[in-house]
Length: 251
Length: 289
Ligand SMILES: Nc1ncnc2c1ncn2[C@@H]1O[C@H](COP(=O)(O)OP(=O)(O)OP(=O)(O)O)[C@@H](O)[C@H]1O
Ligand SMILES: [Mg+2]
Image (cartoon, rainbow over all chains, first blue to last red):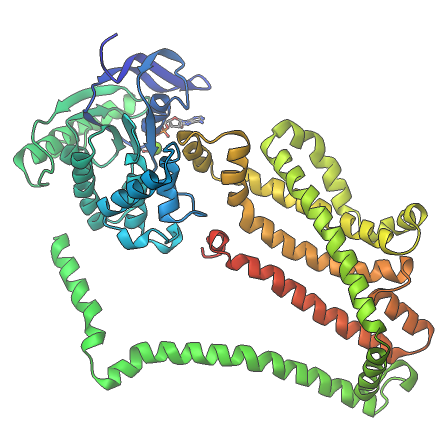
């Protein structure tokens, strides 16, 4: 075995004989930020469930090392706990109450919500909730973060801000990340590597590596170029032609 | 450009603050007036309705629309109330009824919520028990009165039994349904943070269903208070239900009304008390949607 955190070998998952994912092979190295993009229904959530161990593949092999934590699209916070208590969930394993308290405070400072420890999720805005959710995921010593469209429930401006926030948080507390999204800009702005998937059944069309340091400008040539390429690979770019469309239909 | 849109929106949002008195009165003023009117009306309207009912009662009794012997005047009722108070027995009746309701209801809650949780989290148990619970839920608790007397005689015990039968099955059903409706994401988050077994039950399942459980407690507590009156009429020697039944036998319609008024007032207070639970911060989220 190599020192990859995750290794997939021709992994497939089908529901009732209908394939959702087909023949996925890829690796995630420690410290890497991998984004998976693809059209709705291509099996992105299914892929994350497989990676987290919530689900098992119909065929193929998945190897995973280390502890995993998932960040959900929205409403992953327990509404009956305050922001502070939600973060405490992730610090449960710390024995000393003093440690827990200082860690919690450090995390709240990190996401800029110092004064909101005692607020309940329903008293926070969508963006604030998602920041608490990120803080909770970053608390403690997790190796791998799995994110399922973590910002898709937010408005465009908040989403832009949250991308910077995530880049900054990962700079402070480095983690290996697999981010699933249908937002190609988001993938290109954040990831070291973008895996592009086809429509259902999901297969890997291609991969892109980006070497630029984070945080990246949305208008940076490398980012815009990646967006362009990925769009055209999904058959959505400027070059979209009658041919591409019939191609998709016959699939 | 999104940037431009944002700037314009901000300008608009700032406008009302830097405004003339006229505009000021138009925007935030109209809201506060509306709120004030609402809170005033919320006090005045019920008082108005109560006065109307009293007035109608007074008019009906004053003009003898119904035979005098079957339709007491407000004055007679007040006298009847004072008479009952003087002997102090009214307090005993209230305590007797409350004791039965609280005892039967607490018993139903302490057994019903765990059973509901068990059924909600175990599909096989649910499959086995749900039809039976539904059967007893559909049965009026009053249908148990004959057996309640045959098995438990007269006094506290048959009433407590009937209250239990009233509250237990609805509580089981609503708890079970609430568990089934918990979003799956909570359980997955709980798994990420290594919750399992009893911890999962106490820290995730139970708080997640609390808002729905409290709604059902309100409903069943109201039902219990309704049923205790019927139970005491037949299977009691004291209590507010017996007070009414006894007054009927003594041909004292004024005392019947005294009993009715007290029952209604206590029912309202009980509901208010239980609804206070929805203000608990860790439960409030279920009602603020
Ligand atoms: N539990 C299930 N039972 C049957 N089919 C399922 C199940 N879960 C997912 N699928 C199917 O698998 C496919 C992939 O679903 P998945 O939720 O992974 O898509 P997705 O890429 O996350 O979509 P979206 O972007 O809309 O979230 C879908 O076409 C869906 O019909
Ligand atoms: Mg999905």
